[in-house]
Amino acid sequence: MKIQILGTGCPKCKKLAEAAEAAAKDLQLEYELEKVTDINQIMAFGVMMTPALAVDGEVKVSGKVPSVDEIKSLLS
Image 1 (tube, rainbow, N blue to C red):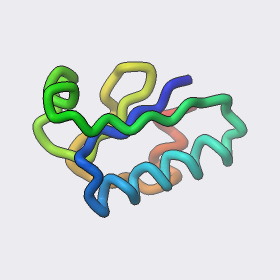
Image 2: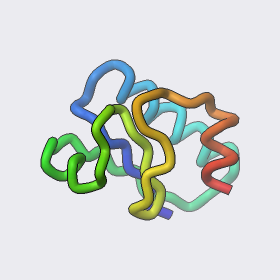
Image 3: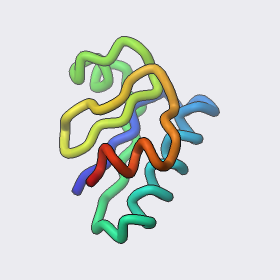
C-alpha cells in the first residue's frame, strides 16, 4: 500500500503524515509513506487544498487533517 501526503510541508501536513503513519501501524499494514511537496504533482492529483491524503494514487481526503480513526477506516 502506498500512502501519499500531498502538501508543502506545513504543520498540518506533518500532522497528517504522523496520523496516517499511526493508523497504518495500528492496522499492521505494509505501507510506503511518500510526501509529495511539488505543487505541480499535487495539482496533477486534482487537489486544490492541502494537506491531502492519497492511498494507492487515489485522493481520500483534502483540505483537512482527519483523526487516526478516520484514516484507519479509509485504509481498511
